[in-house]
Length: 364
Image 1: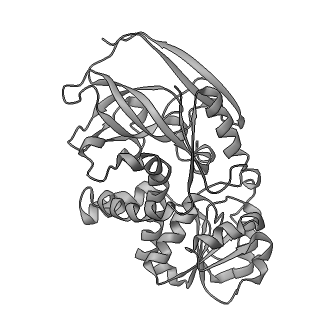
Image 2 (image 1 turned 30 degrees about the vertical axis):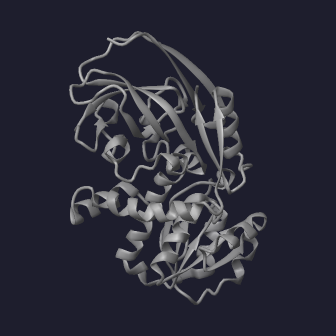
Image 3 (image 1 turned 45 degrees about the vertical axis):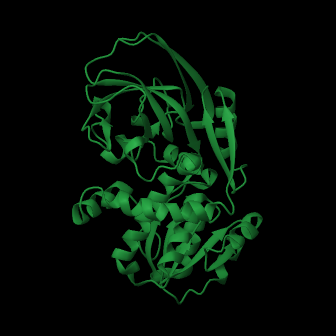
């Protein structure tokens, strides 16, 4: 039995993400067999988390940490410490990496325990990929660098997504395209994809951004070219392209499809950084039909082909180089408490955070 604890969690309204609330719950300390109580030490907040809201129903993100009523708990990448354990193979004091809500505690049911980590096998997690319910034991992660924990939280999750997108494209011979179109080029997920395409070196990447963020994106040096949203018509429509849409701006997607026509060889939806422009039908567009990229599916496929854990190994090696690259442009800001969490979430939601900003938060 654990001591009584006060759970505090920031939730957002599912149909109006600007409406946030703080929920406080008293945990009695009663724990079932194999349950583990984790204190959330810190977590990252980026535009990637807004994409989780956008796909909350479609991909099940709202189901990771159930909430009451029409509110949801946004998944975030974080570090947590085991406070109390009722599982014989998990000890108090262990540091974990994984998905956490924007709060101070998480109660999980541990299963699939190994030297590398375990999964939350609570009933409400059964429908989701193990990729989303896993917790890595930091002490057994050779790639863990205490000095880079904040960068790790800000970049690892989105870098994994971009790595899998690029791997999928490479495996598919980029659908015969000569270049990538990457929207929301100033977002960290897009930067990661631009970096990965540069590292591969066989395809040009064209980053698409606002005029306001053009200089920032050009100075990154990871894109072959940068254009603004009002310059879409200047692109060479005779070259076959693939699009990776991080913005979710349907008017931009439509414009690019109509511009390239049948030369739009693949259209991949990943994020939704332009939340005010996500409504609209994209089923009747010329060229390839836009489809949502499901990262866990590609990860599972590659692990089956390469062997368990191989994706994590390859991504980890590549991520170290990307973290070093981020030293040139990433500014990390720390915040603590429910007000800081709410204010930061609303700032990111409204698109008012500078592209170089990275936010690391904690409830207490």
